[in-house]
Image 1 (cartoon, rainbow over the protein chains, first blue to last red):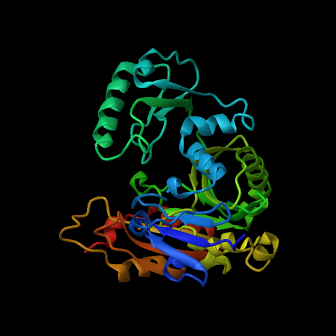
Image 2 (cartoon, each protein chain N blue to C red):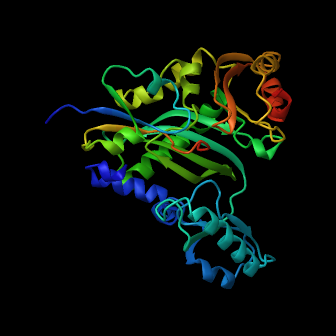
Image 3 (cartoon, each protein chain N blue to C red):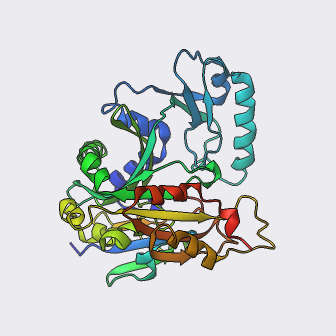
Length: 57
Length: 315
């Protein structure tokens, strides 16, 4: 079993500190980049998804 | 997003949390006295409302679209017509998976102070609280998210209750490696959840309040599985309140000809509180022009910001 991977999917609103300055080991993708990829998230992976709508809090 | 997850438990958890009826069903064991039901739009006019005030909302929805309140004096035929028109207008832009036009959830109206929590379930399903916020009502309701603040009193009074709730709710849904932003109403000394936002913390940089206040990144904590020793955190800052201030585009402002005066707004803040960080935003593509992370040991001065009229900071 491989190591878990950490992903941040950015949204259309302000994405805060960590996605702008990701630490090593964090992959940051826009929603558009994700949709164009064939990436699949495994159960051991950790995913964080920023809001897409500019009024979501 | 869920179609990329090879984890059926996580996918099921996300779907339940985004479906207002399934979510109330999942919560029913923890809140057995809370009234909720579902019905089709055409059945709303036949509701028999007694003494409770109710809220009616699309089973899947966001942004308050199609949400209405009702009591025994409400004209339900008129209300149904209003909902149908509003949801139809928005349905042109959003699929059924985001906004359900046919099915509605009816639940008792919860009136009380609003609180929010950023947290994650770790690899074992244990709840780790990343921040607790009080979300006071601003003077102008159009600036609904103007302030979220946190302080030691909030943690002293509510950390244990929130941790117990999330441990129980997470066990019901079997959530692991899962961040969550949740909103609650405090009623009769107990919290009733009103909204869950899976796979994330509070948006628009709200979660950065933890970094500016306590020095840790909540997203990084989720990845590393680190817990926070809250008694240690507050031992060095017990007198301070920390707040996220969302600076809205003024309600009366012509955004085509006017722009925010950041110098004036910062000066206004600095007269009342200490600015920890200030982020300017593209006001032409957002309903807001800045985020300010502030702190104060004076609760009255912090609360005075709730009366901010953002139109005053456009020139």
